[in-house]
Length: 133
Image (cartoon, rainbow, N blue to C red; front, side, top):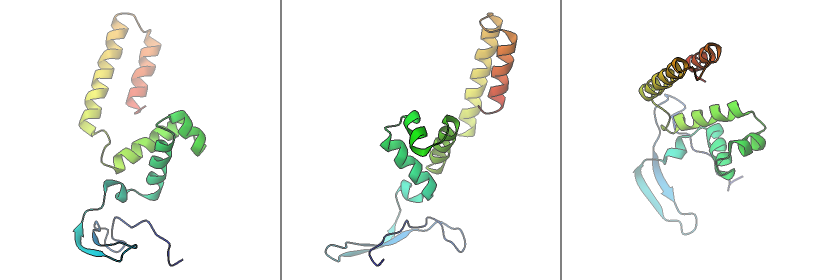
């Protein structure tokens, strides 16, 4: 097991503070570089998020293919995608989400006023919006 590599922790197991990379080694020629280096954004991912991102990329972004590969449902894939995006700092921010929900709510009410939706459908759509889809 001397040649095994491990996923480096991104936070200190003792105090929880972020960890930094301080030494890089070339296993081919033995050169070493020391200093304080920021790990890449993906290095901070937990193993479960990293596995999901790799599967998502391998499936070329096809949620149906990710469902098959991981043996999970569509909503689970969407939740896993959102969790990975949040872990990477790329998730929707609360303000943007609130604005989007307001716009969707206004659209539902406008469609109801134009009689494009019946009351039951509009209520169901508004409730789904409230529930976070």
